[in-house]
Length: 198
Image (cartoon, rainbow, N blue to C red; front, side, top):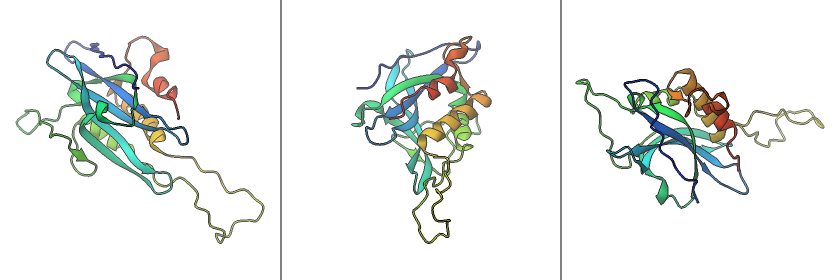
């Protein structure tokens, strides 16, 4: 069952409302858990909804990953029962993309975009962190390696690695703020570092 979701409507400046950014953790007993960002929508009275934008990289360590932005993802309809962990706040100004006439672009039901359309400044910043390529060594005995020596260990880059890198980048860009100002032990980066791996 998913962890309880709490709406955070803290103000870090006098002009902007903020939405809570969560990391969804899809538990797995055998493999590393899949991680993705989730920005739930709010209703007119600022109550958090079960639907929101899901941002992640999808793929595997052998073949690599691709970036994906899914709008109107319903966390309660996912039979994998992800756990949601709040990590920080994102200003509404970073989540709205304006047309040339400065009106907001509405979101289409369940739209996925992984290639061309940048949804907003948050999406743009996430895209600046490249999706990981293959990071597992393929077994190849004819590769000319030295017999008896272990193969060179490479850094495993997967969805968890990407969420960590994207979190750091969003903080550096000033897009992702702490849930509670003044609590250094609760920075978004430290919150992500403490998430379950499986």
